[in-house]
Length: 164
Image (cartoon, rainbow, N blue to C red):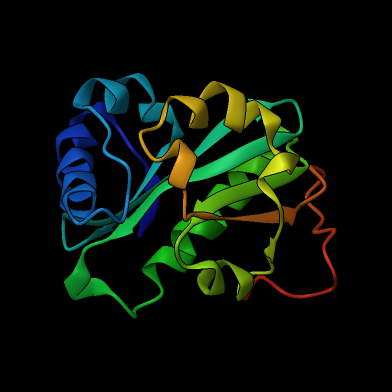
């Protein structure tokens, strides 16, 4: 089940992110940062245990980013990441967001959900507020993907489905 995170979930969110940060797959986040942004997070819970996480961070009136998407390795292949992304998209639609993006090492995952690969220059808010401070800024291998959702509950991409 996907649900909005609560402050009680912050420790588990931190643990999952740390596991992937140590592998170099996700950027590390402090526990403080997780608490400060807890309203952005969704968790996937199975049998009382958090096994997947993700967040939707608003950057501008029409732009939000899916961040910190991670699923425990033993739960891969069950559609948990997809469900979290779908909840992030629904949240973006509810907020009136028109474009949702992600920076990822796995663009194929997002492309299956209707996202398309774009250039980072489409997200100056992200580049000049966060990316510029990243240790990987000059050698970033993340690929930007974008989904236009319209912000009115309608998907406005190239006619592909999000698998709903």
